[in-house]
Amino acid sequence: MGRQIGVGILGANPDRGWAARAHIPAINASSQFALAAVATTRTESARAARDRFGAEHAFTDAADLARHPGVDLVVVTVKVPAHVELVTAALDAGKHVYCEWPLTRTAAEAAALRAAAEKAGVHAAVGLQARFAPAVARARRMIAEGALGTVLSATLSSSRSKGSTRDVPAWTAYTYDADAGAGLVEVLGGHALDLVQHLLGPVRELTARTALRSPDHTVAETGEAIPVSSPDHLLVAAELEDGAVVSIHVHDGEVAQPRTRLEIAGTSGNLALVSAPETSPWAAQLQIGRLELHRSGPGEAMWRRVPLDDDAASGLPAEAANVARLYEGLAADLSDHRERVPNFQTAQALHALIERIPHRRR
Image (cartoon, rainbow, N blue to C red; front, side, top):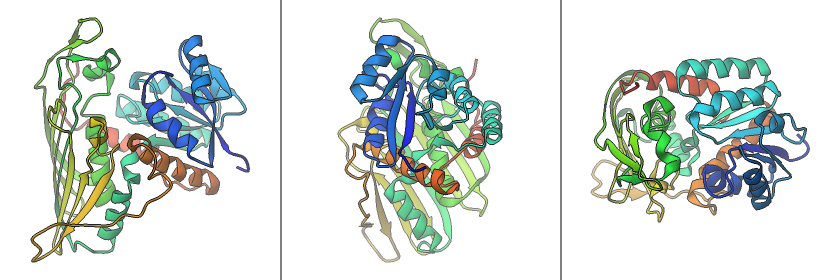
């Protein structure tokens, strides 16, 4: 494309939300993209979002946004249960799509969207942005170059502060319903499984269990009780195709500072990806925050930090940095018709893997 890629964001809440925190800063920092349009369900909020974010157009109908000639890429940042309808509207208009993870509630829904995207002949990206963290990219190169020898095992631990208090914001209430497909298992569990497979290869065998340790929550604004059915703990034991074994523990309700650590052990040394100190507890999530990379080898008593190169996204807020890197990968894909970023095929396979985890659905 000779001009900037016009982006239309569905779910661009002017007051809060992932679009405002991550996508808008990423687009504004890019020379490849321009914010063409925003959409919310109400005229007043759509116009407020247009004015706040500097978009050219405001819509309340997803199909109208997708059909606009100034929109080349439709970005979906709404609640997971609405993804199928909104992604379908974009595909029907023949537009490229960037949908936040989780793509859908089920693997069957993901398969249908994958087929629709392939039929439309467009690029369909999914927001598995942990892959684009500089520490992840460097670790992947080191592993591929044999810096660890043969990888034997990996252990991943990651926590979130979500649900650490009884009263929770109204906008998060739907995520406590397992049927919504936006709980711990799907979101943080999905990002964790994708990161492990991106670094070390496909999962061959998987066993898992979940637990719901904090079942009592109320809406902070109203005091209304929330029926909680989505687990807040996930434990996974997996074997990869090359025989390496992996353990994963992710959980909500962290009252201390949330944190992430992925340690990979090989025959020649170890690597550790560790969440850097952040002021925002959300930024400790492996797909959001800045990860440091450390290594250790035979006879070394201490871990050594691996230097990482800064890039154009390094100066952005933590929540926007990896998203910005995904956008740049997508721009390259659109330019030369390759597939650098995770797509709907990736999402379908990941949803199928998650469905092997027993967790509550009413």
